[in-house]
Image (tube, one colour):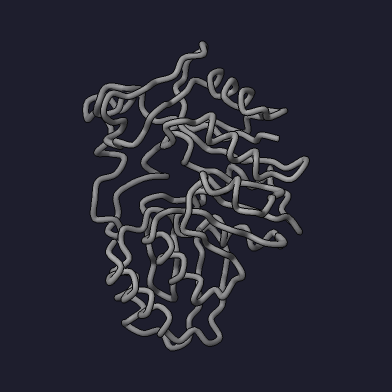
Length: 280
């Protein structure tokens, strides 16, 4: 996104009336907005694609590509966030951070290098009026950021890193003593310590470097000097959780899989599976 487009959209967001808006948290992040205007809908459309969500603004339903409540509900039984200092690394538009507000944390800081994600967050938070802070930065900024966290979320990031062990070390460096990291990442279902390194893409995604087996992932965490590795859940990625909607205008899971064999990606690799872990 060029600077002019970014600044114009940010100015339009800031000019919206946000008096007496009300935030409601359920599977979607919903906002009751008095004096709802067409400009609000126009900005929401201008901010496509919406990958994470869903969000509701009065009768306007932003049906994101990912039903992110599926992931959040998997993590929910394991969360204890009251009075905690929290980071969400790779926070996208902040859906998970808004959901964390119901746990009454001390503070939440999101990190994501995407300017579009920042604008989507700013749009929602303009009405939510939360104290969440968003940094346009990635995981590599954590060691020098100057804040230590009790809980770090790193969801859907690790497989995009060309050096996943370094990424884990960067997360660990930002933890308070006895802190925890929640990670969601893709894995390959096999019993050895092997790692898949795709040729050019995986599920049509070019910036995926390594997809480990669970044993290999455990070894990465051990090399990063984490003390414990707890598996919370594993799950196939399915069309309920990820699918094409009018809010992305691009391909989604159904286009990424072999049309004749949904157990394989379009490239012939095993179809995406995700693992949820807690590291301490």
